[in-house]
Amino acid sequence: MHGYDDVRTASRALATEAVHAGRDDLARQGLHAPPIDLSTTYPSYDSRGEAARIDAFATTGAEPDGPPVYGRLGNPTVARFETALARLEGTEAAVAFASGMAALTAVLLVRASMGLRHVVAVRPLYGCSDHLLTAGLLGSEVTWTDPAGIADALRPDTGLVMVESPANPTLAEVDLRAVAHACGSVPLLADNTFATPVLQRPAEHGARLVLHSATKYLGGHGDVMAGVVACDEEFAGRLRQIRFATGGVLHPLAGYLLLRGLSTLPVRVRAASETAAELARRLTADLRVSRVHYPRIGGAMIAFEVDGDPHEVIAGVRLITPAVSLGSVDTLIQHPASISHRIVDADDRRGAGVSDRLLRMSVGLEDVEDLWADLAGALGTAAHPPRGAGNCATSHNEPAAASRA
Ligand SMILES: *Cc1c(COP(=O)(O)O)cnc(C)c1O
Image (cartoon, rainbow, N blue to C red; front, side, top):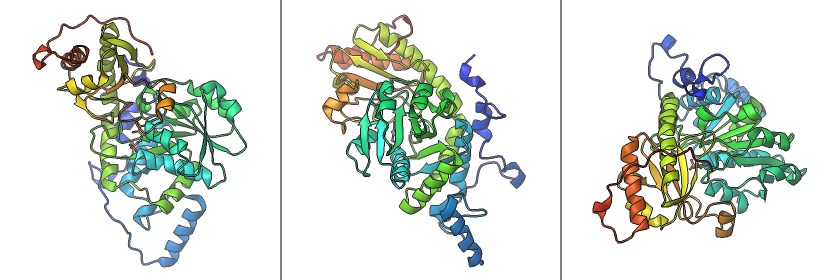
């Protein structure tokens, strides 16, 4: 029925990996739910052995055999989530961090520590990612380009090429395979937060690094902040060494919640995407909406531009949650120019296609008719400011042709 149901990892389908990866040892241990290991330190009477394990970590960044020495070197509960996410993304490894921004920071530090401080990036990116690069907070220097300009923008000190697809907040898509080709030997980082591995697995298209704000769909319930990078074992080792030295570790309870979130990820993404596609059709047919952005690969995110005042749409929703962030079970709406991309210079923001009339909506698991009634009511408020709250009733438009960005 859905193409992405058929995506298979090496041996098991994605839906199967989602509930079993990172848990394969549990039944043999007589456990069902994964244990949460809250230890910050791990006792050992063999300090010579500990020294050897620390030396090995300093050399390769490989996870120490046996229990970790100290919580900043690794955590068994977090490792379960990392194993599972790597399986879903089809990579050798994954390294988890305290937030998506901590994960991106670690990637930039890995490259900067090798003297490769130049980054080539395609706008739009998530507002804070844009800010981190533009402000040069970590000593990096960025060249912004479009996908066709990547090859020409590369320099001997280029350490990273960064793209988002679909991008936050416009849902613009790039051809990951073509971009990876243009990068040559420079690692391509694809932020896969919006698509999730259910819809797209960038490593299969040549991205060496796959970044997630796990705060969004992977956690999926708006109650855990996390970031993760899925990649090959060599890069993962460097990321673990940076994590050890800089301390942006994920809390074990967050690791547990993320592993639990992954188990329903395919079901959540599929259900929310169906609703989002239908809402995108209705918005496209609505005369109060001037433009709808909905990605070719689908997904649960919609961006749209209104003729009226976007602030009034935010003020007018009653069921939909007016909040930044995305990927939760409830539908969220926000105004990127005011919130998620506020920190980006206004001209750069508009140049990246983030108009002041753009709204970004993360579609959740509510009933589509309830969502449409709320949205249509809020659009009515925006189009006619004096209308009272009693005018929310709306007729449902017939679905129009599928919209395209
Ligand atoms: C939210 C987000 C981030 C940042 O993640 P945090 O977990 O908030 O630090 C990075 N990229 C994208 C696409 C995002 O939506």
